[in-house]
Length: 239
Length: 239
DNA sequence: CGAAACTGTGTCCGGCGGACGCTGATGTTA
DNA sequence: TAACATCAGCGTCCGCCGGACACAGTTTCG
Image (tube, rainbow over all chains, first blue to last red; front, side, top):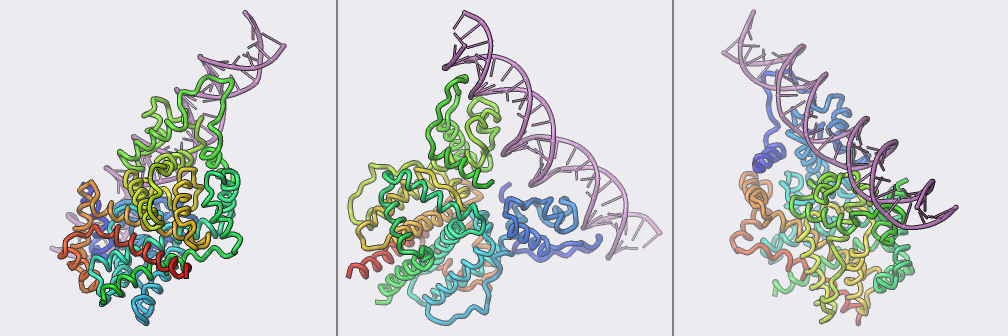
């Protein structure tokens, strides 16, 4: 039965654009629906995305959407793949694998930064769409010819995705737009000041980080650590 | 106004256990409520956790829960911190920073494996509880004396957490318990067989991975890459 | 020119989170 | 000991959610 659901989303993401013949002309299409949902999620957050609100933005009733989409889960899957979008072809193939992966990761971070709700909805097992797969393809292909095995190339891509996801989350918490997000760091500092004796290393690290100023180096830090680790392995394999 | 919500969850997670005086004796307490929610989420998934169901498991009506918890968000935050639990003190301080971090990461992966729903609910900015902070504390303290700055020690911990999260998600997709999860890999293979020409590197990597057998090396792969990258930096700093 | 196919709509359902007021149990105080 | 303030749990109500279903209007094919 759950397989049936999967096939629903698989057909929606991968199948042909559908070709009705006899009925009245559809006023909507999957792309317009997905874009409406994305606009809503970008502007007001994923929690505000409901069938009713998406439909209202399109000038129809919510039940009309069910003519195009089997359910909300499939709509969200559509939104995700459309929001991620295919890997931009103009992004160059310049440089070695290291420069390519760095640029790839930067691009992915931009996407997640533009659509933070994608993170919330891409936890757990799911079927990936063509756009998402095109990103994975690009990362794996950047590692072609490095001597890494197929599994290792995939593992490296997954590792980078994890870093991008983690940084995006952290960046949203630290430098988010809302005042609530800005206060989160203050709350953490307050808690550490109150319960500092229970977290000595953490307090020390945070104090030292605050003293030395810039704390938004986390992105570069993790990226360089991962790429250094990959470089070490590639070098070993090459010898 | 959102600040008010934060203080709610902050008081709940960090405040004193509350001391009623005059009224009837409460039949519940925060820990029992959190454990009931955790049991439900572990057994049937986060989607099945509702005020009604948690209350039913405790033998009360849902409105009784609101005497202990301001809302569902706070209940979930409580569940998260209780499910993660404080870092087990018996986990040794043996070895250098590398062995310590490896064991730390393994422990975190076990926690996420036991309570996969924690991943779904710990995306986005949030206030961390004492248990969650104790894990962070342990990771940062493992890097004390390595020559890394405070910010770098924190960034390293975040990087490891990201890897653990990513691997947990992937492991759940690949080797999950349900038959639906097992079919996910099959679906991916089928899609790549159909649209292989659009994803040549991916198809090649997956085929090579399948040919060489074991694909559950992703955990060790990412962990070693990160630790290697850290080691390289630490070595540079030491000279 | 039917008839079949399909679109958008209205209505209805169960379940959700949560506000509010009530009742009864409890400990403090006069 | 009696009165009272307090607080726990319950019942009711509300708006919103995702979704099932039947219906009416539109379009195209035989």
